[in-house]
Amino acid sequence: MEKNKNTIALVIRGLIAFLFLLSAVAKIYPSPYFAISTFEVKQLYPMGFSETTAAYFSRTLIGIEFALGLLILQRNFLRKLVIPATILMLVVFIIHLTIDTIANGNSGSCGCFGELLPMTPVEAIIKNVISVALLVWLYKLMPAGTDKKNFWILTTVTFACILGLFMLAPIQPRTSDTGVDEPVETAVDTVTTTPPAINSTTTTPTATPATQAEPAAIEQPAAAQEPPKTKSIYSQYFASADKGKKIIGLFAPGCDHCQETAKLLTQMRAKNKDLPELLIIFMDEEAEKIPEFFQHAGAQYPYKLVDVITFWKLIENGDTPGVVYQWNGKKVKMWDGINEKEFKSSELLNLYKKPYAELK
Image 1 (tube, rainbow, N blue to C red):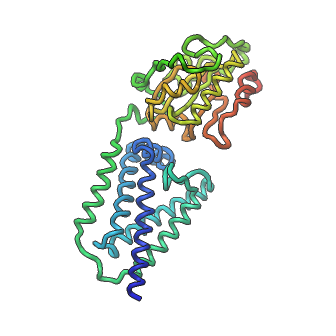
Image 2: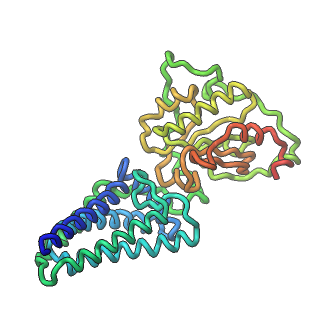
Image 3: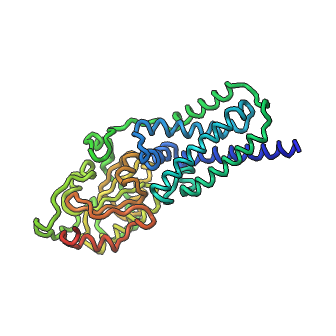
């Protein structure tokens, strides 16, 4: 009987350790800074965390997940501290996810396993409830007084894991803490402005590359039928962003769907000479793939490069690829992701030909 209890206890400890370590690794996949910044913007900002607080909290939280995943495998203060601390963390997650589900419904990814294994809030709640039940069972299986008492093991592992996260994904300086509603001109100085050259042997559509010639002039309606000129959040990156009709592409250079969307826009420009000018804002993750991006798109376009957090704000916490159609700085339509809000060429073609009176 005692042997069976020990076997069950080992299995539970191994399973819990696996879940915590997987959760921590998933939050830094595919690259630590990108994954952690995405976790901050999509999960922590909506909870009310400031940019500074979120940066420290995210790394500390993931570090603790790593630590608990390791500490559950050893015997020092296992029953007295490690198991109760693990249960407490899971209970906090359950409460948060329950409140979030009630308020926002069971949609989107809860972020528990990052982008590696998307999981809805309800799925995460079920997973956490089962984990709590297993830990309670483990607590009862562990005889009182069997803990080893080397407290330095706990502190060393915990601080090493937290410090490791800060070293793996250093907090990068931000140009502003005001967000995208108040653009800071100095941010423009840090972005790349010249598109890389495309190999002349690359096959491209017959569309005239955007960097070689301006798109054909669009016949504008009377001034009274145009939207009033407004300063958009994109004007800090492109001086022409708020002049007339524009298409803003919000892309990640290594994103296959983004490349396909840019290619589709190039093909649309070949068939519709009056299609508004395309301006691109790239996330700086995998920036070295920008030449490959333009090769796939079949044309070069003016672009800017921004950091991960700024990019997610510009895309309004949506997903890539993002496409915005605006007129005189007024946003007419925004598409993002690859699901129900994905970019549809037919919708853009319909919208940009409509007079302003029909867009109100």
